[in-house]
Length: 492
Ligand code: GLN
Image 1 (cartoon, rainbow, N blue to C red):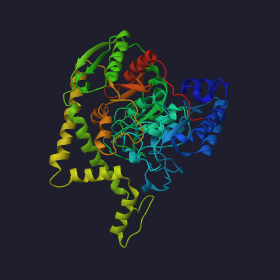
Image 2: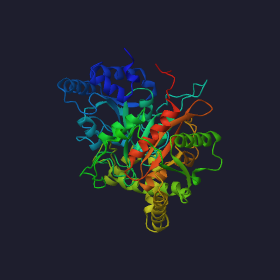
Image 3: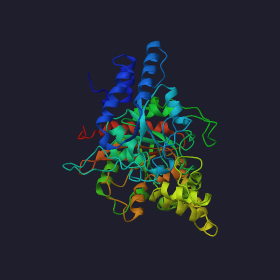
Image 4: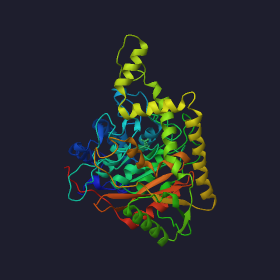
């Protein structure tokens, strides 16, 4: 029998429908692969019993002929999602062994549709990071390595466990969240597909909050089609999240293979950075050529406020984080370190529970929101955010259907190689992705080529609000042209 873990989600769905294998066999194959790949540190919790129970239930629905659209599909869940009776930690010590008594809306929709949960995936602490090195569970290892080297590379972040697990065939797909790039950057670093939907498309209910006006859940998978399949289940209106939008969820998969002829694709000149590597430039030009060959029209566009996006993001996101993280006080959730009085207990708990990057964000956030600095930092950043959003609106008003950019300024880097002395070095990873969150738009990262050392590189397509379908159509054109990417299996 073929290795069940190397199937695409769509092929696995077909195999299950045809009864070529059972959901239990598919799940067991993944559980075995996970066991052999523990060195990657992608999962922080494996849930084999729950997985097998869900797989058996899926097999029963398949036998009865009333299977849901994801019946028997084994998935991993970023540990930022609340899962009923299954530990959820946001990969922070402060949540300790918190076991939520409720399920996030996004994951509950996946289980409603028959999917199987294999376990919880590693991520940066509270999703703050670009390399998965801030996790209380330690770093995740990227399944990819530079040619001829055995240096361990980061999978990107913050959804590094999700990206690594999907890339290494430890699940058919995974959930992620993206506040400033945390789906798209790790997808690019591991040679897989990831999409951040339009703000409001997926419910944030039950997802640990980082920066509520930017956070959005989305899927990872190995093909564009597979992300489209997952997104249909993840998206939808939820009365429990007032920012979730009440619009019908399209059949995203139907967008795959749709002609892109006549579509206008913008190439933003401000994304051509000084000192950008020639490889990224070549990749970008190649992507444009592929879309042109498929009948799209390429136009140069301008997004003049791009250069302010990163500094504005690193004001807005920490500000919201400092407010959201105020709830971790040792009383309501997880860990507690006692003190002589309640104030000291708060201080001790927070000092022991939060890692250095989270502490840095809370301090920045508190500072930019404080009296006397609010106008100079927070208010100004919000104004810049409005201008960034307007840049995109102006481009789309000129008939542009989507914008093509690189996903990241480089390929994956080594563990411990970046941001040690200067956190800004790490923040620069988000240069092409944060604008999209600031504007609330959808963005997809698709693997498109390799760098000189054989590491995958991704391209990003940015769409109009709620037009994820166009991104799936265009993304698949790039995928078809670029071919598939898989890491050499050195870990098992
Ligand atoms: N790397 C960015 C940050 O650390 C984005 C993280 C994310 O999207 N969750 O804020």
